[in-house]
Every structure is written in structure tokens, then in C-alpha cells.
Image 1 (cartoon, rainbow, N blue to C red):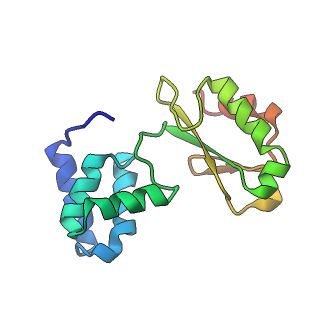
Image 2: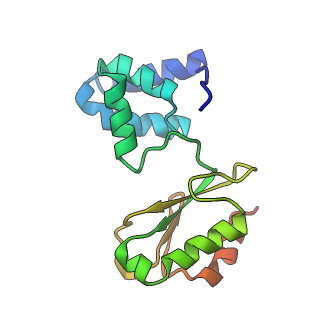
Length: 159
């Protein structure tokens, strides 16, 4: 992955986020949530600043970022699509729904469309098993999704 250069104002924002949690290493997950909310993802350069400000190792920060599926080190699309692949969703056809999103958007799992509008990922469980299969797009949740619903769902975001 190419190294990026963080702008001074971005570094200052990261420092501010860390200070808002009293630069406590025990607040790493909260700091990372805020950093990802501001940057959209957590590239190595962001992780390095966080590690320095919280006085923890970069390896520790990287370990947390790669352990939790919520965090990402690659930019997501404007509308990140997550298809639940938990047991209930899988049994009820989530795999077909996922394949349809990949087909419609012409992008594999873990990548973003060329226009930066959509990215596709899988989740283990959304916690809405009664609505299986479940898809989230940004903050919005869609339940009982079938492969035939995908085109109409995507049309909602085409404007």
C-alpha cells in the first residue's frame, strides 16, 4: 500500500481526538472509532499518530485495527454495503444477495467502485436474525433481502 502524507490539519485533528480521551492508552478503541469517523479509514499514518499520542506501540494499534472487523485500513465507498453472512442470513440466501451486489456493481468483496460510491464487505452478524438476510448500507438496515431486491436498493443511492 502506498504511503500517504497526512496534512498538518489532519494530524492536528488526530491529536485533538486523542486529547479528548486524555491520551489514555485504555481509550484506544474509542480513539480509533473517532479517527475512522473523521478519516473514513485508518491508514498506517493515522495509526502511527494515534500510537505516538497514546504512548502505545504501533504494533498494538495495528493489532486492534486488524482484530475488529469494524475498522478498515482501506477507504470505503460513500455508501458502504455490508451483507450479513451469519448463520440465519446465510441459510436464508445471503450468499445469493452478496453475489448480486457484486454482479450489479462489478466489484469484488473488500473493494470500492471506481466512482467511490459503493464498497462491499461481509459481516458475521448484524444482530437482526429475525430479518434475515440482512444488508446494511451506511447506517440503514434492509431486512429480508432477496437477490431480486438488489437493483431497487441500489437505485435509492444512484441520485
